[in-house]
Image (cartoon, each protein chain N blue to C red):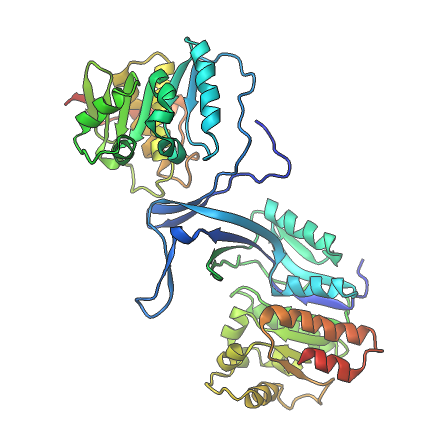
Length: 273
Length: 229
């Protein structure tokens, strides 16, 4: 049984362990031109504290933001048949994000990232499990929010594109993650063309467009140019310059406006900028 | 086992690179205390958090009332930091003591690299049998009568992950004593479980059953025999 959702997010869900290192136990080495975190090899290094945060990742965060702001929200994602997967699912349930479209893969692990937190910055040890991605039968939500997935997800993006081409009334928000940026704008042409609202930060915009340009107006219109001419212009396409954590929230604000049309357009544009 | 609601479970993060590892450690500050646990034949004492010094006094008190309970002691980071003065009573009461060569130097606060001197200095602190391991180089024991050396048991294939090699050695040596074996035989048991543990990930997966251990013992090379040194 499926029901009509306002907001369905698609993308990897992960547990983050934030490991706060003690000042004396590590240092940053800048000798090689890049900043590298250094600790004594083959030794025991006391850490200060650990904060384990289940059920995060761009799309999971977006689904929670939407739910807290009053939309009926769901997440299409994958976990392993392990303790951390159960924890992710129960956390989503606590946040009133529907887990109807979550797939539990027995014998596989749940994505788990280790964040080495030193001073006020962090180095993240990441791994995306290679889930067999696939779209469930999830009815037609008002909005789909597409973000970070593993490197084996390119065929899945074709499937999403196919779904969206059959559902012209479903709006698409796209906030590309690492691998979606690596796939490139050619491979994801259909997704870019179908996107109603697109989010990235300034450095990501340069990376996506493969240019050094720093003029924001040019970055905005170049990314807007990726929509192509195949389709007639849809609902106003917006490009946000916010940093990633904010953009998930601002996307939810736009969508809240969409669900509650009494929001004035100028009001949400101010919020966005 | 005591479950402390509202507290976290100790969780270490092992950064595994090549065949060695850097461990990010944190011991939660549990309120330590001895339960009523009857009188076992052996107590094996090892790694605890930095707030455990009073608990060590409590253990010492228990052991002083139970002369028949034998004690194996393999000090962890904080037990080494407490120092041999603070843990004087524990050292005196120890039947068999384990550490590696670098730990022996740290415990004694000396640079000495002569194993015989390290063995007898630690024995001077109280333990009846002292065992010092030296990784792939082998292991040494001294029980007041003879000083013995035994090479490492040959690796069937290159070590995969070294966590727990020393722990496996020490616990297996202690078990051999508990089974009535003498020091020479216990010394031959320890390295076999070390060899087995480093073939797999983590300190526990490779631990052998007595039958498996016996099979390795039976096919040990000719020179796998304790030698006086």
